[in-house]
Length: 450
Image 1 (cartoon, rainbow, N blue to C red):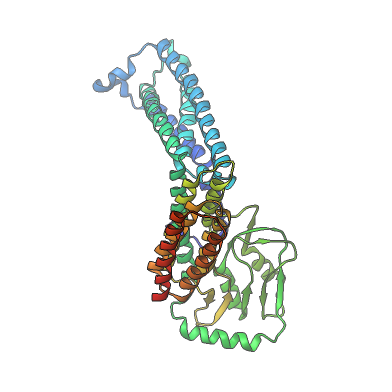
Image 2 (cartoon, rainbow, N blue to C red):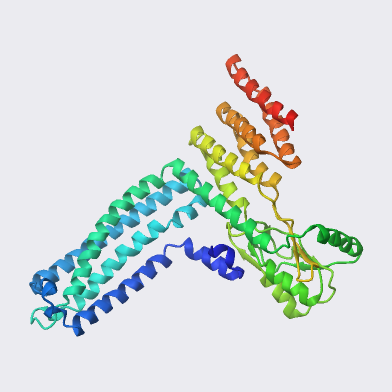
């Protein structure tokens, strides 16, 4: 995967900007279309395809009719382009109002929309180029039959693409599809982030952990050199590999106190080191390892997609939307994600040089952090929606079936206590109390067995 192989954080950020833009893919398609149009024109001009018998039908056409046809196609395509843009804007507006403004990123990342915009704009430019190069149709000096056939083929393809685009947008505006797309991004982001961080760590951590503790104890009393940020913004990427290489060269140790996704302000301490003196060049290198931006991204932030699902659930529970079924769908996806997290080994937050000496300590996310983000806010906002609270209890039961560590059971136990306390404050009928009691008993049994 491209994500896991790229180590340069600048490339990672550029790649993220490109894939969530409406300009790169259309411009790429437009460039390829112009190149294809010019190539076909040269083939028509210099290869004498009009002498080939089975292609002769391409070169026997009325010049005036052909030119009018190309002009009509260009005008019609421009109308379709405006319709496509209108549909896209409507989809973005609906996503922003119903699912939250941060979900616009997911719609912009949709490659189908980018390709559709690129194809229709390219078809319009293709026809313009062809009309301009056929000024001498009237004297019959040059008839680019193959190029005209390309315009007809692109027009037919564009009609099919328009039908697909309308179908695609209709599917993508459904809440279940939006939630599932965010869940898929969550799974992909967590897998790639964990894989990337694991590659920075050595698999033999037992001896090195002891070595780290000894080193830390001996240096804890020394005054640490503090690095302060030069600007404010969200940390989007941290280049741990470059930091490790620099500390190896300087034979030092670095402690990073911030995480990707954190918001930092000017003059905030972001890392400390046991090295007392750094050259200006080394200081600049250290600061360049932190890529800041105006918003959070999922590049190295596993909490990003979790917050997206939580945001959809909270909006669904708001009085203005009042859609508990979407909130329940979010809980189901979050439960599945937490169940997968119970089977993962979380990065320990240490990087080593080739000699086995730890060089960088950095903050990592934990199971408790991700799991609590997935449950806390929804639990707090669902105090008046019993169906959502019951589904959270069902989710805890599913997680308990796969839990295998003390941190897993601790999370389940505390969430159970908080949900149980909030349910006790409500005036419920006997049937509802029975539903609650059944789930709580099942969950208590799982905890006792653990």
